[in-house]
Length: 228
Image (cartoon, rainbow, N blue to C red; front, side, top):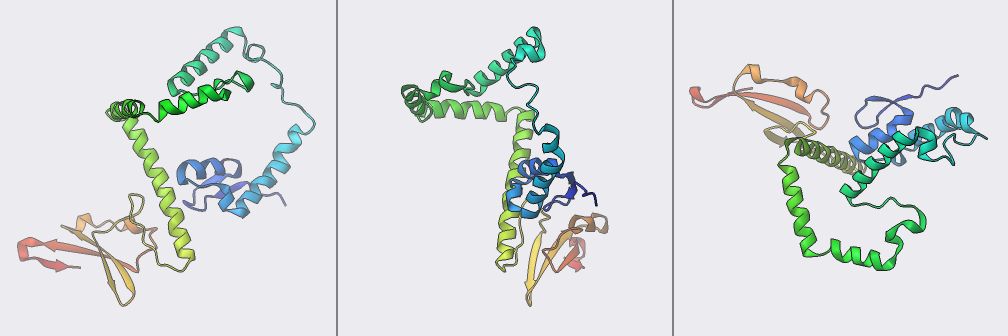
């Protein structure tokens, strides 16, 4: 029987090809396939059955070739220039072997002193403030921050649940009620709204952390009476 390589993400339940699931887990949930042995084994099986046979005994067509041989002189020059500009902007070294200046202990020690100096940290802080004034950069940074934080909270919550704790995550990625009411071992999420139009049950459609959700319509014009 032919295996289906389409699987569901164990965290958000979205469907992905097993070859791309690892990247999704890393970027969206801040975790890896190592934490899911069954999926890791399925990915290894996919590589053995579908990827490895295509290249078994065949060297990479690019191996041993220069960029000029692969892309042509003009395009290779353009690609190298873009790579050089990116490396200079990020302050990283991509030279291989003994050409890498960071292999020199004198240069490496000098670089460590620079990046730990107060002047460097102040300059880095000023650059960060300028970047955060850019709406596009701020939007991308905030989105990435939320994804990483959401993934970390999800993993910790699962570990606590495995230890027998009852967990209620409170984060932007989860529905957070106005009030959490606890009685007789039950936990209730209470939402206080001004009218029936503001009641949105779909907000908690996939939420399993509460025993029940209460929507309370508060009417101050009637002396603070409450309708549940």
